Length: 402
Image 1 (spheres, rainbow, N blue to C red):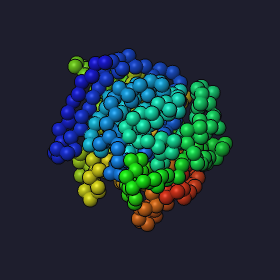
Image 2: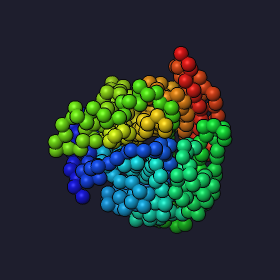
Image 3: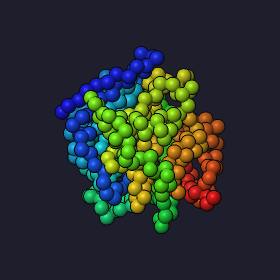
Image 4: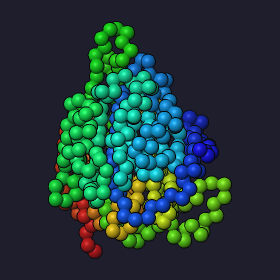
């Protein structure tokens, strides 16, 4: 496999990131035809935080796992690694079908199209076990979610139905709960999760237990799931004349085009530079169309040094199946982020899911509830859940006719 590493300069040595491009897999990628944009999203926490790993765990937890092992698991899912950004807090894998983020204590895997994400689950758990996470039958937390599919009949087992997906998850984990959020005859969202799980130590020097009083990092995740993109906004994500404008030499054409599109559409400045000066973006423009990007941000001033942030974007711009998604754990206020993102994509409709841990202060929870006002859109639905130390807000919006 042909790989090269490129180091990005940073004003702070601790924030240095490494980007690795897979030149073999990026050759001849083709996104032609109808495509299932809505992603399957799996997030597994094997420990409460990256400072509370099991005693015999590898020093850097899941981040110690080799790329080759992750690629072995991704082959089962039917997606390839295009490039990687490595940082102290998180490694961001840009995939041929979406993204993967590897922290010391947790993994986030997001795949679109007809990928078989849950088929790779057994291998994922084996890999985690090899890193020293012994209790893979009941990890600390599991989240699995997805929006309703556009082309459900095209999916492969076990993703042909939500019931099949739940049965698959239940075959691995105990005590899972499932939810359907939203209108069954409209935009809706499925969620499967488990409660925080901690095995009390059987002996004082148990090698399998967490510390007596684990501290979970503050956790917040915002997803914006957009459909019916405006043709003008969607056109930004077609290769078209951009291919002729760019002379790619010793690099990946898709990555160079992706960087160009990121700058032109405003994604590279989605977070204010004065607040987030050191974030890195790794993006890819597919031929003839389609776009993916990962972003990695170091901890903010005042945050724990091990608190890593990310964002990820995926775009299917064809009008008959147009879709874009944006996900992040950056604490920049959900309302602010939603308005910036929708300005880039111009969706006719979109849904927002916002998870935040109830340890967050009351001001943030109030901000959560104010997400209902987005310029140019009317809110048509809003649902609030309290779920095992988290608050979940689900809201749907439609564009207001001019």
